[in-house]
Length: 158
Picture 1 (cartoon, rainbow, N blue to C red):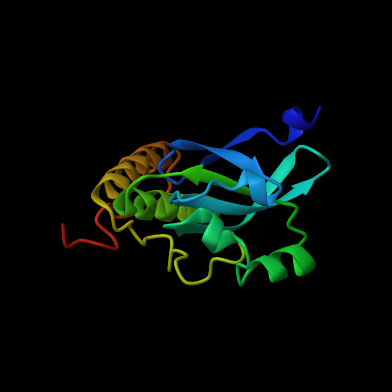
Picture 2 (picture 1 turned 90 degrees about the vertical axis):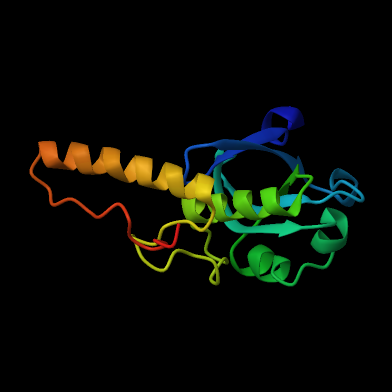
């Protein structure tokens, strides 16, 4: 029964891509000598999960043991578990972290939250999907008479 609740879980980023994470309830569940992405999670009523914090680390175990935000997440916000995903390269970790923060909008991620609705992502791949989703939203909005939003808002340098 524990595997049903505490096995693997998918988190979806702003781009629509789903990333599969492994639940790490104990120290042994956190991979050694591996970089990746982690999510502090609050579980409600067994099945409903809420992301409280998304971060990246070059060494997951070293970062998660004694993390400075875990105390606040656990004591004040009710975090019940940590989800981890191995990611080999720093560039990929940065892209996935940004995508998840923009999609999940966790409460404890205050620095890298989007500044406004028109804040385009920094990485080219995420920017492409952001603009694609924005164009579809504009098209659907025009069918019902809503005002369209510009596609080149935010990062217009590329």
